[in-house]
Image 1 (cartoon, rainbow, N blue to C red):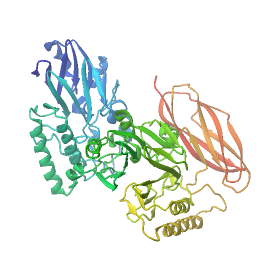
Image 2 (cartoon, rainbow, N blue to C red):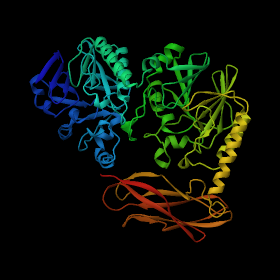
Image 3 (cartoon, helix red, strand yellow):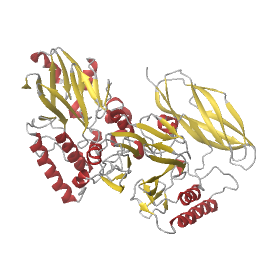
Image 4 (cartoon, one colour):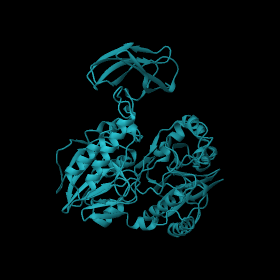
Length: 601
């Protein structure tokens, strides 16, 4: 049944509501259902569908999208859920089934991929057929859900997907379980509907349920009921208090955001500008199960509060302490919506620009353009403040500590180097390129800089007490000694990680028959000059030049060798290419691999 809601707005009742926004003989569809709406559009004078805009990936929203693809209708999908439309085959192959503790409703996705025209990025303006939509992030029913807001027939309309289905009602409570027994989706639903309320729509138009012509009443009742359930389960009880006051003052000009998974810090200038140290997942009330893109959702939820409460009119730049996703995930949003520049340390700027080149944990899914590379050890002036970056290997080889003086206090922004409320536990992970002497170095740095307060990535700011730096030094020396006692470094020293070769780029996408370059960085495990050779193991029929690459190595030194690789055969995802290492005649085997995807033409 197709129902007229206003002069140029219709709703088709299918397995979900499909909204039709007319502009002359053209129309934009919000969600798609089975696709039967295409058979009814002529009844209302629609000759062409210019776009389908999806609010989320669930099958009841779009199981008929293959029909739209066959008809050549452009399909636009939420940016965070793009792979659950266009690459769903790979998702289904990778999804855990047995011993499964991931109860998110991501398996309620399409059973076959559909081509997409592009993605709907949070906060952007999307124009089509003379209509302009604002993309509003609304995590709740799914992590990547969006609402679409537009002005049409004289009203401000919010197409909300399955975020809210009626006054005080949601379409599914099961969908709010983002982890095995968590209620993360409850909290995010409340946050999302309150954000919509602040945007003052005239109507809420859900995918299931009833059109709401009194949005404030519908939202307030839903938040009240969600809070009752959260309190009953003792989950996210301080939610609304955190929403009202997301920032706490360390000094009058230095704030900590306490709603993010990894804290970000805000340096305020007297001119009304702000500089962020780190910016990852703003207002994340619990970590969802899974690690694919659709399980991670940055947004700019507290930015409006920062501007209102502290008179900020511009977020000028963001300076991360390291490249891990929980510290950088929201930077592209800041760049795109606020014009914020990314100033990154020279030690990891390339990792942000080209994450696919590196085999490292915790990389963000998209490249993050760097506007300015910052040198280490050189004071950087920003407004009336000055700060300096220092090398801080340990948590990652590439991290930096940032020292500055704010309101008469010596401050160190330290990222994740030490964890725990006492700031004494060394936070190292071997694949982050940990070296056994790293925490000796960081203890020496801390003692030299002598900060009064240390601002950590996940724990409360640490006001330094007497004896703290001495204790760090003792622990660093002990950690190094234990590693030297346990590892056979006197015989073969490939470092704490035990890796003798690294491949770059780690991930490559090529067309069939297209040659590409692979580099291998080789490490000498001996305290003497040595000769290393590397051969690549590739699938049958692939060509490699040279067949074997040799390089001399200084004691404990590094060198690079390069190969030209040409694939042969059908398209395939993540073909493994291994590097086989030999040093001074001793064969160490396939120490590293690179992943090559041969695309379909």
